Image 1 (cartoon, protein in one colour):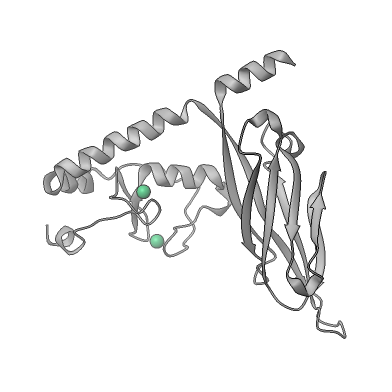
Image 2 (cartoon, rainbow, N blue to C red):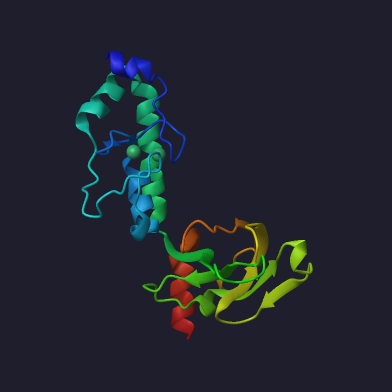
Length: 224
Ligand SMILES: [Zn+2]
Ligand SMILES: [Zn+2]
């Protein structure tokens, strides 16, 4: 029991709550089963331990460690049972929604033999999930991007696919962009994002997930 006392607040580094249905990875880090399932579902190509960045095998069976769970049940029974209930609710909520993934990020290439400072060629993109039944244009009406003032301080309006811009520059910076969603999604019309360009990798990306009520989706598909 000493091990548990040392980590009295056994919190999950993904949801920051008390670990629920604990799963221990090869690197010994422990997360909620539900959180790991989400992580794998969101970006299977980037399934890494959030703490030490060790790759997790995609075939890895996400199973609750019964030994750990019993420790939780013995030591923090009430809190733990509350967490189980919460996760159960999240799981059932999931069944009502269809999730659409939107990826944003940048690619990067360094042009060493250029004679000026702007050696970094980058493309900022907003893309859909190639496996999804929705095309990105079904989901996004336009993307508005505000670059660093050194690029002249204008905002760029991308009104159709591809939602991408390519530029050359001398350093990374944070850009601000707005995604205007298609009306049928019945979302807030616009979402504001910040993204810091990454020149350390060939490609870096993040994910944004929109949830569409399945009933709404059905009624729209029936109309067409
Ligand atoms: Zn968690
Ligand atoms: Zn780890």
